[in-house]
Image 1 (tube, rainbow, N blue to C red):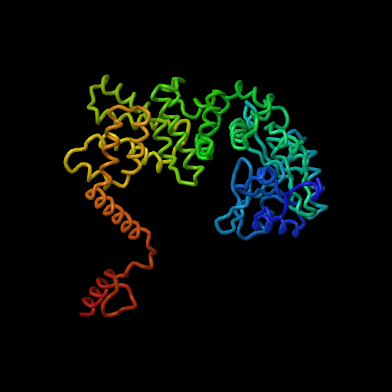
Image 2: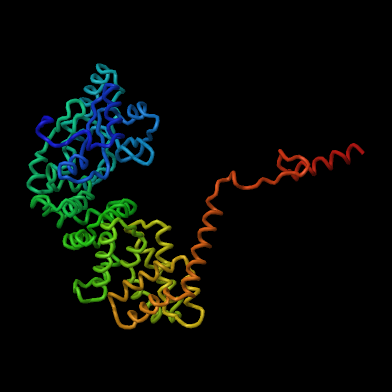
Length: 472
C-alpha cells in the first residue's frame, strides 16, 4: 500500500525507532516497523512501543549499536536502549519444515553473496504437543509474515518508501473489527498457547470480536497453558489485570475456562453467583482497578493478588483452626504460607509482592482492634494505607460489621492525633529512604587525624608496632 493510500506518517513514529530503522538501512539491511504500533496508529491509538524487524541477525544488529543487548533463548532479540525508551529488534523468522541441508546451502549461498553473517546456524525445538521451545529460525519477510500470530499484526512499514506491506489482509480485518489468527488456529495455539491470552487481550483492548474459527479452539485447547512457565504466566496476568480492561479480561478468562489455569486456588471459591461475597469482592476489585488505570493512577499488583486469594485464605485458616486446634493467629499464619505456596506453583508471584500481600492480610486482624493506642500505632505502619483500602474493599463486598469498622478508620484519620502520627510516619520513611539510597560518596571515610588524605588502617598500626619491637 503506497504512502498516499494510508495515514501513517513519520511524525507518528518514535524518533528512536526511526534512528534504528535508518541505521539498519544504511548498513545494508532491510528494516521495517511491524505489528502493534502499525495497528494502533491505523486505529487512531497511541502506540505503547515500537517494534522493528530486520533481515540482520541479532549479532549483526548488536554490531550496529553500542547501546544494544541481546536477550532470550526461545527466540533471540535485540534490545536497543535510548534513555528509558526501549526499541525491540527481531530477526525475520522462517519456517521449521525447511529441510536442513537445503536451508543451510541456500543461506550459505545468500550470505556469501551479500556479505552478511552466516544465517545457516538455525535452531528450533518443539515439545510433543507442538509447543515451540526454541525458535531461532530465520527467514524472509514473507515467511516472517506467515509466522506472525494475528492478521492485524502482520503489517510492515517500509522506511525506504513509506509504504505498508500487508501480507495477511490485516487492513481488512482492522476495518471489520476482527481478531483472527494466521494459519490453522489449532496448530498456532499448540505452537504457543499464550496466543489464546493474546487473542483475549486484543479483543478487549481494541473492542474487536474474535473470529469464530479463532475462538472455538480455545475451549478445547485451554489445557495447554499448563505447559507455560509460571514466570511467563505471571507476566501475562499483569497484562490482563493492569491494562484498564480487567473486568472484560477476567470475564473472558472464565468464559473460556482459562482462569483456573492461572488461579486454581481462587477458582475454587468462586460460585458464579454475583450476590455472593466472593464474587462481589472480585467484581469490585476489578472495577476499581480499571478506574484507577484509566485515570492514570498507580495500582499495586500485590493489592490485586491479595484480593484474589483473600477468601481462599480465610477458608483455609478456618479449616486449620478446627482440624489442628491451632489458635486463630497461628492458623492464619500457616494458612498464608500454604496459600502462597500453592499460588506460586501456577503463577510465579515475586517475593516483593508476596511480602506486601502478607502485610495486607495480617493487618486486617489488627484493624479490628480500635481501643487504646492501637489506632495510632496502626496509622504509623507503612502498610496502613494499603490495609485500609483493602478493608474498604471487603466492607463494600460484605457490609455489616466491617462497614462500621471501616467507617471508624475513615473518621479516625481525620483526627489531629492521627494526622500527627501519619505525618511522623511519612517523615520517618523519608529519612530512612534518604539514608539508604544516598550515594557512597556521601559517607564520611575514617581518616587518620594526622594524615587527612589517607584512611586509617588498624592493620598498618599493628604492623608498625611489631616493626618497632623488632628494631628494639
